[in-house]
Structure formats: C-alpha cells, structure tokens
Image 1 (tube, rainbow, N blue to C red):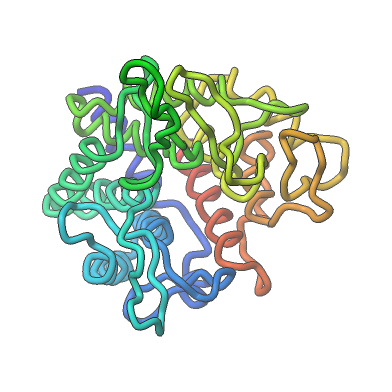
Image 2: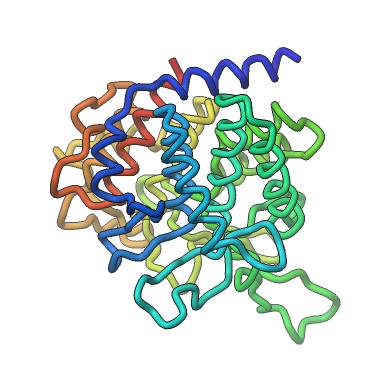
Length: 337
C-alpha cells in the first residue's frame, strides 16, 4: 500500500512539472498526432510516440495525449499482440515496412498510459497499459544466465552461434542497455506487484554494473550476452558509449539507482576535456571530434546533480532527439524532487 501511494504521488509530481512542451509540440508533433524525427528523414518511431505521451502527462495535456495515443494505435499497433511496430516512414508505399517492435517504445507507451490513468482518473488507460505490459513480459523478457533479461524486440536478437556444439547450448542474445527504463519498471511494480517488474529491474541494474568497458568503464550502445553469460559490446555495431547509451544514465537517475551505478558516469560527464564528446569508442578510447547534444548535456546535469536548466529548453537548431532528451531530463528532475 505504501508503494502504491508513493507511485501515485510520483505520478502527480510528474504531471505538474513545468516543461517547454508547447514549443516541442509546435516543432515535432503533427496535427494528427505523429511525432516527427527530423534527424532521420522525418520518420516516426514507437519510442518517440511513447516519449511524447509521457511528456504530455507531465504537461497535463490530455488533448495532445489522446491525439498521440490514437495515432499510435491506428498506425503502429501490431496485429497479433499488444506491441507496436518500431518505425513509420511517411510517403512510403508501405509506411510500416518492418513490423518488428522496439521494447523501449512498448515500455514508454505502457508507462504513459499507466501515469495518465492516475492523472486523469481514467481506468481505461490502465487497462490498456496492463495489456501492453503483459505482452512485453510474455514476448520480450527471457531468462538467461540466471538473469531476467529484456530483449530489444520480438525478432532478431537471439543469435544462434552455438549450432553444432554438443548439447542444447542457449543462443547468444543482443541487448540494448538503453531500453531498460527503470522508472517505468518501478511504477509498473507499484501498480502491479505480481507482474515481476522488480526482478527485471534488479537484474537489469546488476547487468549494467557488469557491462562496463574500456578506459572509462561505460556501457555500450549494444551489448552481447553470450549463451554462457559472458558480456561484450555487440558485434555489428560500433563499440561505443554514444547515441543510444546516452539514455542509460537518464533512466538510472530517474529510477533512483544505487550510488555504485554512477561512479564511472560521473567521471565521464565531469571529465577534463571541457565539453562532453558525443561518443567514445570503448575498444580504443577514441573520442568523437564533436560534442554531445544539448539533450545529453541535460542528462549530464542529472548525473552530476548540477541541473542545467538552459539545456532543458530546446533551441531552434536542436533536432528531435536532443530536444526530447532535454525534456525527459527536465521531467525526471521534477519527478525526483
């Protein structure tokens, strides 16, 4: 009961957070509820729809929330389950050419629905959230190496590298550490303690402590978990702490992770190079020749405990991803007060 009350109060605090939401809507939200990624050919993603739904709850903007949710249901909802296709390409003959989902998009949509249900006293939203949560647990959460792990999507992330070996060796798994949305897991556990989100969260925290690589001890954008439990940056992607992994510290702070999670992250964001590089190669230590976006700067403020309010207000030349990171960092700051 205490956990549920805390969850309700946290949702209320988030819903009252002052955010530069109107500017974001004007630049990235279409009249029919599609969130535009202007850094990637104006496509839309399930994660972007979920991000915007969470921010609409934070801004107490029910009309925008309903618009975004309606577009998402109509255009991205998969036919055979309660999950959502990860990408929509406007003007294409088949805008949803890849029906696979993205776990973070599914999680953010379910989280927004759960928070909206409390904010606006609408049990139908919690019913919709619960349906998505069940699908996530059924199709994306697996047991491997003694841990409960979150697959990035239904298809394509089990690597059958063990064929021909003696016995039934488990497959290697590809994991995206930035899909572990720890504050959502905490809220899901508070409203539905029997669903097992606390175990997924605890195992995810342990995984992230072990999945640190290179000179700076940082998590990779994509992680390989071998069938026998070894960890390494995933083959097929640059071995970087970069575009994806920048969300890892955001969700760790927002999810009230233990202090041990932040030693290397604080050293990285507080480094002596003057500005935070956009990425670091975890194999070679090479740093990007350009700095991280203002959105990442806002995340750095969360990690360092020195809130950068200026970074939370998107500028005209900030692209969608930088702008949404900045607003999510602002929402996290208010949620943690």
